[in-house]
Length: 154
Image (cartoon, rainbow, N blue to C red; front, side):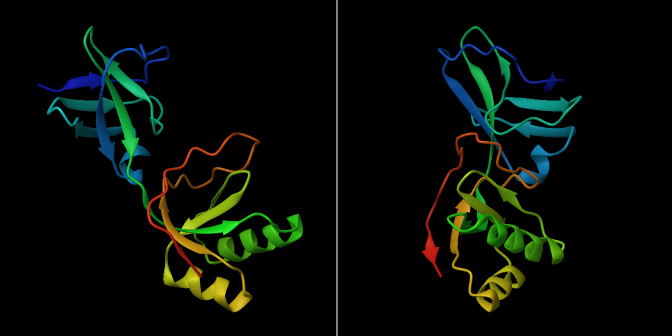
């Protein structure tokens, strides 16, 4: 029978070795789901609020279990532009009814043909890469916490 999880652990013991449970973004956004950690331990999730990438959700005397979101293909747009330009780019992507996230240095959008075509038409440079995509997240002065894979500049 899987271990039932209701919330993240507020003060995990960082000295314990970790076992990862890796999930897709859409799974991580849910409150009811099941998953299996890399060591084969099964968990059922009945959460009051969705977990976040990097949350410790269970620990024993010997190990802690941490959820990680899979990186996915995204388009990265540098925010080394005037605020009005950045706002216009964000509006244009939002006008396509696509999700967007931002941190202090970049915008991220799904790597979809419509985004590529829009940015090429607007002559906005972008990079195709992989990252942890958390739509609706906007810059609040925090440090970036992304995982990058291979990149390809356009």
